[in-house]
Image (cartoon, rainbow, N blue to C red; front, side):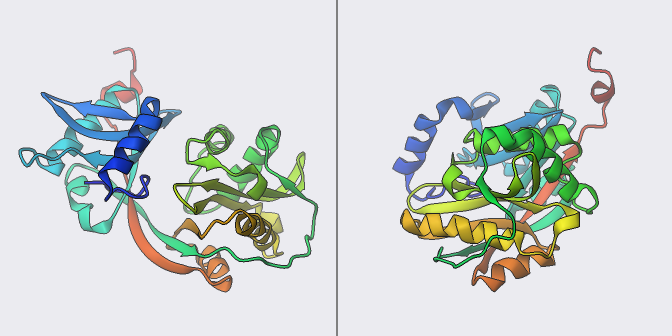
Length: 278
């Protein structure tokens, strides 16, 4: 049972095996008296995020029991917060194990198409050299919102390093753009490539002082023009259900909402979270 679609085609066993073999160093296996599940784990500043969770269910252990073991193992690794995104239909076992609902996310998807554009500011591809400045903009983009996706500039910087480093799919530098200059960025869109002819908008953000000026639309247009030239058939993005601005933006360019998940979070309130040497 896969609880998210990090592996695009998990109905095909051979494809799943290929993905695991190609990225074997990125996957972790949860074991008790036998293997229970496989997953990816991102752990930064004691915040853990689960991806690609796959339950190795032989019918003898419940999902709820596996979640309990997994949560405790992650806390033992030093995490004080665990986040996971799952379909609403399977969220109950997580809630019963102490995870709380954080937010609802909706996936938008559509076919990339060529768009005419007139950049307001200079457009540049997002490269590693832009990360230090871009991380400040990413942090500020979420700082005043209820989402609080990045609690510090450092976590925003680590997130950008992960994206450009290929931990969320093959980074498409030629389809990822920032508005402004590398040292004075106001907005950015980062896109990764997945299996087959698919791509994803992993981050799309604008500094609060520069919103509603068309920067995000222009960056998406530039990205889609590259995707069209490179035969990408599907572009997706996950946005918070409460983010009406982002949802309207994608609806305006013809994208449809086709999937919903709930993000769940668990926090370690035990003594080890405040006394790591104990």
